[in-house]
Amino acid sequence: MRIAVVNNFYPPRVGGSSHLSDALARGYAARGHDVLVVTAAFADAPAVQERDGLRIERLPAVMLPETRLAVSFDLSFASRPSLRGRLERLLGGFRPDVLHQHGQFMDLTWATAAYARRHGVPALLSVHTRLENPAASYRHAFRGLDATVVAPRLRRYRPRIVVMDAHMRDYITTRYAGGFRDLVAIPVGVDPSWVRGGDPARGRELLGVGDAPVILSVGHVIPLRDRVGLVEALPAVLARYPRARLVVAGKVYYDLFLRRAEQLGVGHAVRTLGAVPKDAIPHLLAAADLEAHEQGDGLGTATLEAMAAGVPVVGWGRLDNFPGISLVDGRDVFLTHRDDVAGLAERLVRVLDDPGAARLVGERGRALVDAHFTLDRVLDSHEETLAELVAAGPPALRWRPWHGTPA
Image 1 (cartoon, rainbow, N blue to C red):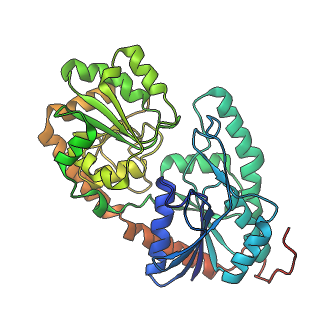
Image 2: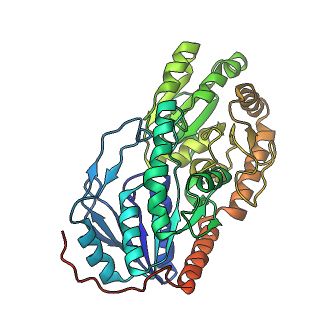
């Protein structure tokens, strides 16, 4: 197959969507498919790059300022008058059999969706982020954007959509009804090998907390994963383990948890490392007593990578988070329902109280990842899904050359 992978976010930019789209693109190429990556320019990354058997085209883009409305992420957009003509030449020369798009509200998804509709190319869309924000005013704005901007665009070309977890399934079916061909359940894929084999001593140096008990939290801090629940659970943890420390490894886009820590008098027990190099994560995980990241909004890449490293995971979440894969509290992970601060604190203390039992939970979590969430297994599912789309034929029009004049 000739597969065009589309994502505004792509390495060297960091992030779950970026790393997964890159891993899948490299996996497609390794299995003999022709792969073109279409992404937005970022920092000093080359405009055209060939590596790992694929070609990467980074289109000129503008970085928007960080705002709470943008989920506190720095977003880059490639829209400009010349974009349509550029994509016509780029994709017209490549002649994709299928598109694999990432991100429903990004402009390259919309632009390539228009190309797919004009030329009858089927599309698979992976939705990584829900347009949600805990603040009421932003929540209404995001609902409006979904209803008036995103959903109408999806209805024009009706992609097949990848459902990564139960939260995302509920979100998609509610917000984007009529905007997709069908849904396919494929969990987030991780590469277990890269998070294993970390050096605990090196991790302790990076953590900077000596030999204190460590609650590690990996990932950027955004409104949907704000760490406020962890901070509110800290007083109960510190009452039993006064030297315990919550260490956040990720860029802080949203600092409410730091202000809440000061209000509760536990600011001394919270340490932020900022964005850390990828090669530091295995060492941090090896040194941590546990990892606590997502809080009721889906168990994503950071959680699975912690589980793959054999680190017990504590948090808020649904035991039916992954369609078709059952989780058991206290066996595979330590989970309680969203907003249950007392339950979260109890599980944090339980892990610190009984390291042996917690280690067994970590080992079961590791086995669960190996059985269901490795990149090879997830790549199999994506490859089969793309092949089905190609076999089903174009959704509307056949491919035809474009003879227009670029804007």
